Amino acid sequence: MNAYVAQVIDNVSKKNANEPEFVQTVKEVFSSISPVVDKHPEYEKADILNRMVTPERTFTFRVVWTDDEGKVHTNTGYRCQFNGAIGPYKGGLRFQPNVNLSIIKFLGFEQTFKNSLTGLPIGGGKGGADFDPAGKSDAEIMRFCQSYMSALYRYIGPDIDVPAGDMGVGGREIGYLFGQYRRLKGNFENGVLTGKGLSYGGSLIRPEATGFGAIYYLNEVLKHENDSIVGKRIGVSGYGNVAWGIMKKAAELGAKVTYMAGPDGYVHDEEGITSEEKLNYILEMRKNDPMHCEPYADKFGCEFVPNEKFWGIKDVDIYMPAATQNDVDIESAKKINESGVKYYIEVANMPTTNEALDLLRANKNIIVAPSKAVNAGGVGVSALEMSQNSERLSWSKEEVDKELHRMMVNIHDASAKAAEEYGLGYDLVAGGNIAGFLKVATAMLEQGIF
Image 1 (cartoon, rainbow, N blue to C red):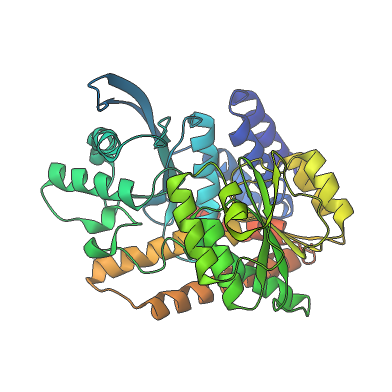
Image 2: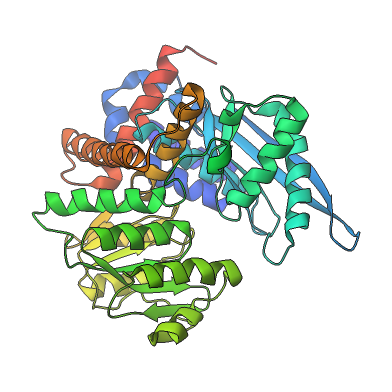
């Protein structure tokens, strides 16, 4: 490994010892770019890597809200504006009780390279709060969102920082956040948030865009291997917007999701989650009870295995972890290696621990695709929403889907080309890191030292 790269990784590990998620993703990205830094001594001279791992600015703020019984609650809000070298900061807001600075920094760092891969002029950022929307009334969520935006609104804008949704932040939350922003600013800057409702500037297919994009990326991997998506059986962890988009687009292209996992266990639907009835039921199920997928098995007479993950089952062709970070650990990776499955396509942000990812990448019989490339379609369509807002236009579903498809083909091709250029073969993990890094590093160099 390049000495400068190794030094930066060591410094990050020491300085951020209490931020394991952030340290993990820095190691994963920078371990891939060593051959690039070898060829570009100017990166070390300008200390590009240390500048990259240091957020441009990070806020923490108090969020005080009142529940329906009149009790006052206090949460912590975050926004990390990680890197704006190629455009306004762009990245989602996550409302979950486990949100902390380490998670926000890792997501913001990862977002920087993901956004770079889209080819669109957007920088990297992330935010959220240690607030759990589950079990809260609409009025409670509205009051929380209004308090959160009252603290944040001074630091965001269409040309500054454009938040979006993430875990725990869907269309309802975005609506409340935008309403409070509009109230405070006194104008209609609908480009300040993405993931909005269609009635006030949202884009068609945004909720399912990440899942659609993941399937488009997978399709390019299969083409590279002279394979076809038709007839493929897919195992997906999760059943939120991302997993639902995977299910829907896979069915459209002739594949089928046969395994679906949730916090309570996993479902095996041998016939596949392909019909409108099944897809619509999943929407209803997660709305009523987002923590349990067993009702799907009860409804459609499928096998349900409680409190287990399906990693290691052999009757699928493709694994797509699409739930949360560190879902696949070293023991799960060993089972995946033994299963004989050829394609491991990350979809959630950092769903695989570094140790597990190293093990899977070492298996030359498995093709591993990284989440920062595979799930970039979501933020890509968010950027398309920004374009529509700036032009005061609303594109058709077909137009957005066409642009998404084109974007995912380009991301795959850029990743494959970068890996090949640096003598790494068809290494999509390294290629994605290199392609994303190069654009950001070039922009930082051209803009001088600051």
